[in-house]
Length: 396
Image: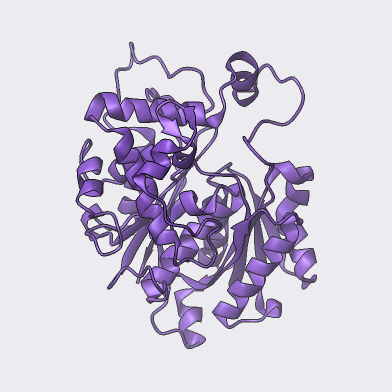
């Protein structure tokens, strides 16, 4: 029995600040994905929704909310939440049901409506919640963590503010040709460095915005896709949702300290490195086989970290690849050909699925204006609060 799972369809609602319910964005994306897949809503027997905690009752319990908005059809529902890794976890839920034979056609939906400005914890006092404590005790917004990671690259590898700005310049150029991107405007290194300093060494244009948006993916078995006439579908080679292993000696948001390594010693592999390793191992793919990567660029410096965490280059080499133009479309290993979060902004339950949409379009040869020629293997990377991580590897 062939247990391979295919991406049958993908769809998105453009990112922006639209002032509407996240449900409307999710419905738009789902209908686009169903149209792309060539299947009707009545054919769907599983709906997996990514929760969005800011919109009441954890997104009204997302799977059922989207099923109702699309029109009750008797489908089973499931709901996932893993912070910024939500979309990948939801995708893995659907994939597992298909592989087990309990679903034939599944639609996975993530959608969000975000507040203006910093993402912050919900109201109330929770003294055992590190996400609440970091705001209450230290005023540690997300960019403060991003700045620490950036400063770490500077100290360890000699990265410069100009390197970080170059990431934004590259991604802005990629995003020009993406109709779903919120920001479609070229910027220069000077534009980045002249923008307001938010948390030294990061400027405003080094940091992604918060956005409204949605993405959806239709999954089925490869066998069923071929019965529907899709001879060579994009395949889900792996979904990694691993957690850290003690001791975790790299500070992760929202924690205020790392694990103590005195008794156990440092591990050879960091948490973020282990996310990608698990994906490569499951898919039977070597990092050298990867044609493009969509990574979680909450800040420009984090994109450079992810390149090394995904083993696309050795530690300390990301800046050299960037400076040589190897991470742009047309280079050796394009990173964020969609434009990344730099051009989209953060819509938490949707962004991991948006990455899957982009990689799918790339592997089909449908990423007009930003196409990575001959792409056959693409990988994504995300990290959520509280030990959530994700990577999706797609092949064709």
